[in-house]
Image (cartoon, rainbow over all chains, first blue to last red; front, top):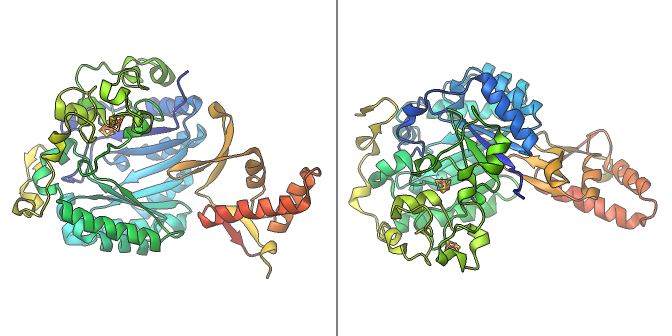
Length: 367
Length: 94
Ligand code: SF4
Ligand code: SF4
């Protein structure tokens, strides 16, 4: 029997006023403009609760761009869900945050691009850093929990200590240091974002030391970087095993990157109940469990631990989503990953990222 | 003041609930859940900010007359302490 999912990632919209170079949303985000309406999302949340989901993460894009966010938070709470808002805090007012708290919002996760306003705003492609700090400080007095998330790459890894100190000064209970995942826009900007091994190693040792120092005060989570470890990430804790993603147009996916995979016919909540899709959707079944695995994974003692890694990465690098994730040292394709690593700082990593930013949000080239 | 007069309360960011498909009680926290034993759920339900730690111990001991009092007391203390350490329970001063 299929286990019940514990988490729902609700990507309410792909619209976003920021233009982070590292964004992992699909670069053809405009194709998903036909967003579910309030009733549609309310039904999704109710069905998620019935299915056994405990957490909903409202994400995007920027979920604050949905005027009905308060109503959706309320609907989620009515469905018994624990509610988390993942936001850039762009133009967030104290009044709106209070309304969200009144609606029952439990937890707010604010993204920071860097510790310094100049560098942060350059990566975000807009002036937003100073306001984020102000908005983050409103969260706890309104009775909600605060997390900070920073996506790490070559440009901000040298400042990881400052980023940690900033999150601490904001009173965050949790800090997620998430190394860039190479999907969507991040892949387009790889030259400017890809870290070298030395820079990564010193950032990592700072993060681990700070984690010790802050124990009991702020949880510091270091999300390991793609391509620099010899074992793959247990992607989504296994395909269709613990969580599901609903994207803006109502399509249901096992992971937010999965629409990049070819040959799949995804179900939509517009035509099929969520529980039905979870249990019986053809594409949810496709990489669930271990039956689909390549001989390399099928005979490996780690198959129930990492589930063969990431299907999207296997596809992106080998053209076959069912192969062992090349991030794994046991994969016959592992050289595809090792050849991408940067062992030393290289000049190519230095240029201002703004020069590279193709303005995917507005469809033109920036600066 | 002795710790026992303080009133443990489950933080707002942590919520106790029944997890039906998995037949267990859990405390849901921002990025995960703490799975509870039956006893854990019983204790957690008493962390309402009204009862002192002493009263919580009394209530659990009262509900389990078969268990030695000293054992109940040690269990409750350890359980509450662990939640305090992780920031999911605070001890309020009356
Ligand atoms: S399948 Fe790949 S893109 Fe999707 S969440 Fe997993 S690691 Fe990420
Ligand atoms: S071979 Fe497959 S199951 Fe084994 S460690 Fe690598 S990815 Fe995981």
